[in-house]
Length: 387
Ligand SMILES: Cc1ncc(COP(=O)(O)O)c(C=O)c1O
Image (cartoon, rainbow, N blue to C red; front, side, top):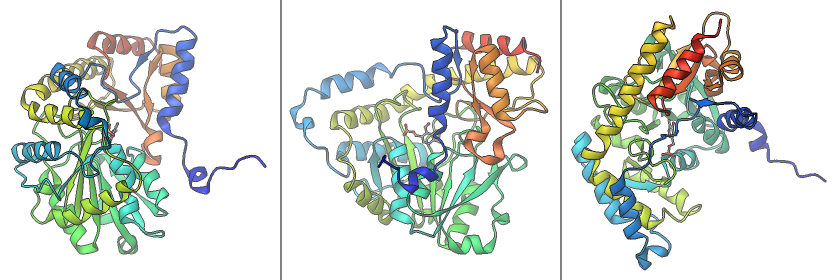
């Protein structure tokens, strides 16, 4: 009998980025000069002090053994100091902080700690696809909360039916937002916290892009008084420090939520290579010097790209955070049709909005992860198309 995948895998939509990668590889294999604005992966290298920290620590034989489940105390203390300085939070490094093998790992495991089969998981639409798939893996029903353009790509929390709230146990949020580039303020988080209290919800706020901002520094959900009772927030070093390949992030939140996520992890992984945890500590210790130049680079790229697209007549909003530009499709195009034309006729890779959610078929996403001259070349090529 041929092998048949589990039902849980068969239920999943195809993983969006794998599909795009396939198409991009085919174009490259055909010898075309492809400009890839498809994947949110920083193109610049990790800053020197972080690399040097790893080089030094990799020599330490004590780090060659299994890492501690709850992460190195040195990293947890560095995270606590960072959160104190950046957000004014007082977190106990022993119970309210959990290092992760990248924030994706924690996001993917959280539903196993929170949801029972048949519970509802409230998931933004569009969104980073892992919220949906991890909720499904836990046997939950997914309720899509449309991110409304008219509400600054926030969900209309009052439009969620009472019977949905009654069955919901978990709400994912992601601000600054991938893919829309929108942000949230403390007033929004206060409202979310009230709902969490009223409906006994766990709020999982994905703050992977919190340090990639161009206006006001985005807040932490945990700045809302009482939020620790319901909230867990995911942070990532990946984009802040050009460290996507290193796999280091962290969760902060109330001790019982952090312990529950830690319990899942203790059963599936054995922590982050300790030398990488120390490199993560170096990154956070030097946040003040290392993060601003990276932010400045993306600001320059954003202004160049958005400015050039607007000159062509496209109505492109300028994101206040993240390195994503969320572009409304010209009339008559679905996101897949537009992305296909950009790839086939301009060799520019973008991501169709529909891959992030059913409500986003009128948008494509461009990631500012190539140098400014290439961004401008992409715009020039797009300008030559008649759309
Ligand atoms: C919204 C969002 N959350 C989380 C992640 C995962 O980041 P990492 O696992 O590298 O920390 C990504 C990566 O692209 C993302 O876009």
